[in-house]
Image (tube, rainbow, N blue to C red; front, side, top):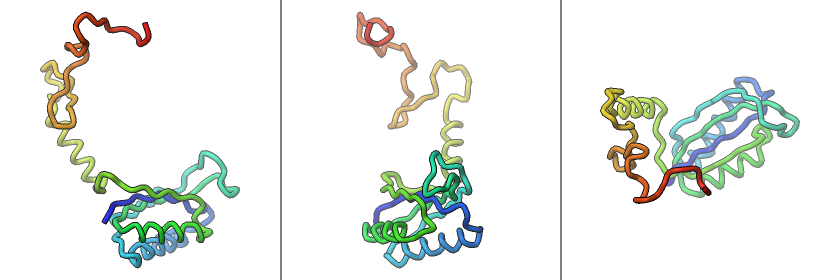
Length: 152
């Protein structure tokens, strides 16, 4: 099964009960289609960048789930026919979903593994394979090349 993330915007005139009911129906659509819901994050009422269907605010919800493409098609069909959803976006995740607490914990562990400001001369940056990245200006130009603004 593939991992997906969906962000959808509900009408701002829905009360809390209406938002909860719509989210439950969306979770039900995914599970009935053979998918499994990993998280539902109700972000809350936010100002829209531009009016959508005469609304200038919307209630944002982020849904992370795993499923087959048929579950995504069914979810998209539900979004299209439901008047409470004013905008939606579904993307296939390349990186598996992690709970936000796990992300913060992982970032803290990586920060602690750095030089911690001891002045060891490193930048604290690492490459994808975990090695320290070279400091800027440490021989990353070919011999005879001068550093300067591009195009000069």
